[in-house]
Length: 583
Image (tube, rainbow, N blue to C red):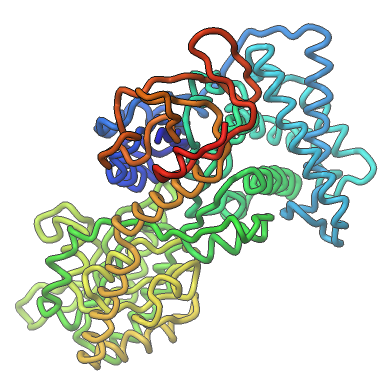
């Protein structure tokens, strides 16, 4: 089977956020071929290079989202009219959607009107894609004055929601620029029969802009689309746009919501990484019948030694591991630790992790100042040097060479976040067999099950009481740690993730109409462009198979060597089914 893997700011770049997950998936499914289509987010991401790619990666195509592109394309009168109509329809769909709600306005958008606006958005999106294909690109048009004026007309038109009507000229310019960046995949030359049109399945590693190439491959070439999301883009927009004006937030939220709804409508299967993401997808219009929850696969091997020797931990040490940023709420953790110290004077807190960006660096300085104020340096005697019971450290040094060593250094792992998606750090602590105390945010409860204590966020007293209860009860800590390790090994390993996606790939292809016919030596049809079970001995996995027909849907070829289907046959995953496939 040939998979087109679609990423944004991830694999194959070294600094990609989801790079590890994609790399494990590709390496684990070595019986398939992968073509990578990657969108980069910054120049620094590109200069850092790629990770080493396994041999099953056949093609890598990349495109930047960060640089301004001048395509030097001058539209004629007809093309300008087409652009104005399509972009105007897109803007109208955004302005009539309720702020932050893709399917209903603040007063309750009628169901029929919601479906009408969804169709309007889809028609405008694919209309722009077809215009880009005919004319060679869209970037200049998307940044043009015509685009700004079309957005302004939509915001001032009757029926536009209040936030859109209040948009100022700077707001309109900002939204136009952001839409241009998000819609850049429409101008790529990836959607031909010998490119994305030649894969058996498109797998988008995230929603939003990364899924756009998959939508267009489905639109132009009828390639089935699988969407995997560990964080829903609409939710991310809410969390990352707190300082923008109401007009900017509402218009961009409407765009992300409409795009998510269209992606979910066209996808063959949607795989959220947890129930928290699944609820967001359902809220954005995903059909429950398409949803398959697949927990992220994590490598348990680095944490095996710590998990098999829990007695090596310091029974009085609490550990926090992660990226230092305001969403992690280390301030509440420090105040909670002040109460813990009053109950357990010998306890210590190790905060392990570096800052995330300039905001994280400033937050780290603030937390260190707060720790110095709450916990003056202590000394064991009059001639000893005092030290603070709270330490700020990073992995990679002699004391903590790795994250596994950080978790192993304490008997209790604490998570104090106020915002969290899937808590990967908490799962790592579970692999290490450590008891945990966490705040009830994101997918925390789903991840830990009943193997740890959960308290409300922004509640230092509750966090302190839970930590003290476990510090005073080593037997309970041991039981919870053992149960946590068993749960993590059962649900969150790389092996279960790869097995799940292997089955989903076969499920999608088994009910997808064949877009081309490939024949083996005897003239019998093969079910996939590259046989899905290439390592299973048998006639259908013969590498000498020849292509009898290629092309997108509706392509009728005649002449020697071409076999044309009258009725598309469904690709099957068994020898018997492939032998009986109707042509």
